Amino acid sequence: HEFCAMLLLLSLAAFVLQTLVVFAGNSRLFGLLKPGSGWYTNVEMSIRYASLVTPAKWAFAIWGIIYSWEIVAMVYLVLSPTVATPGSLVLWLSANAFQALWAPLFATERLVLSAVALAGIAASLVALGFLLPNTTLLDYLCFAAPVWLHAGWTVAASLVNVNLVAAYSARASAAAQLSLAYASAFAAVLFGLCVIYAGPPLQPLPLVAALAWALAA
Image (cartoon, rainbow, N blue to C red; front, side, top):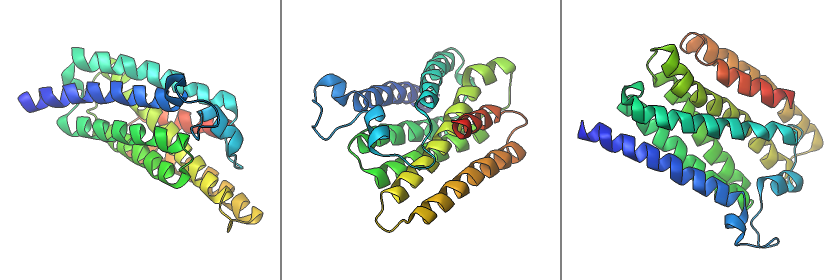
């Protein structure tokens, strides 16, 4: 019981800390760093680095939905701790740790390392989605669904980051980048189908929606 309570507190703290780190990374440490300091916002990075699969700017509005919904999930977790198992909370901690690492890595143009961190977020959240108990509709809407949405978007973002690394590699020709772009779109569709097939019935639909959103953008 004490271990579960500790995991619950750590999960809440990790979410708050990761949110602060992400917002700090996307605002040059809340404006403390000036333009030209080597620290870039997400919008600036999308201008500096683009690939054949970089989504349109409007697509990133999904982050607002993800964070708002995950705030609801954290409140629901406090009110109904049985919605998550100890194993799923460990994966939640892992996802938040990777996200906290991703923000400064991406903001400082470390594309390869940020791609690794994004893949870590996606892997943690997909595994978490599979571990969550299949209980009530309220549990799903208030906790599982935002996890699946976040998972889907970070899977798409991971593929974009891989394309960014290739686009700014001196060894990647235009033909190679085009091939990778097509392969990434195919991989996103295939991954969504595999998760739908292997996952709990209907639960991964937000993941598929996030992938579709990214492909449309």
